Image (cartoon, rainbow, N blue to C red; front, side, top):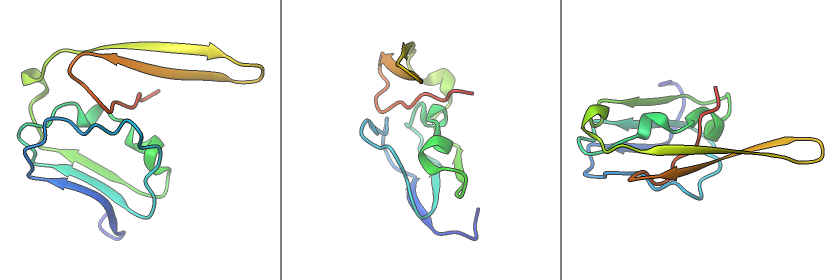
Length: 102
């Protein structure tokens, strides 16, 4: 991951959430989200879908998930003519959550 530029770096902040509601794509580099003592749920964001296959991400040493509030995810699946569209709705203290469909 070090061989490529970093497009998004969030390191040692006081952020509690990322609020990435409108973010659909990250181009041109890697993502680093590290050492944020108050940041919850960053590891559950589907970074691969935002970055594509050409960049990497590192989400480490943020707030311990056991200290974060609970959340509930409702997965809505809508059938359209030739495709299935999945959408997440998050209820709870999490904002900017992008579902990871693995």
